[in-house]
Length: 97
Image (cartoon, rainbow, N blue to C red; front, side, top):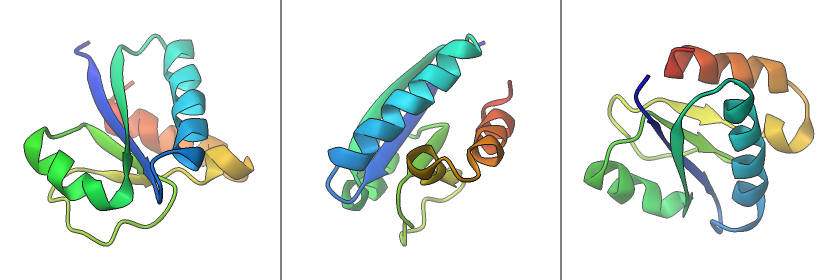
């Protein structure tokens, strides 16, 4: 399986996205998925996607910009624990594992 490119973002690119990166990384490691994960500010995502298209964007908040065919997953459940299994299943389906 080819390495999956994942972008994680939040309002500042620091606090909540750091927690999401840690939890998503643990989830992918448990499932033996090879990946590259990068952390950004939400406002930077459109330019980052235009420069190098990821397999998925996981965001702590709604992204108002159109990212074309790049799927966006709301990752708030990795912070609250509520609905985390559903979010993980959504990521599994997008990444194909």
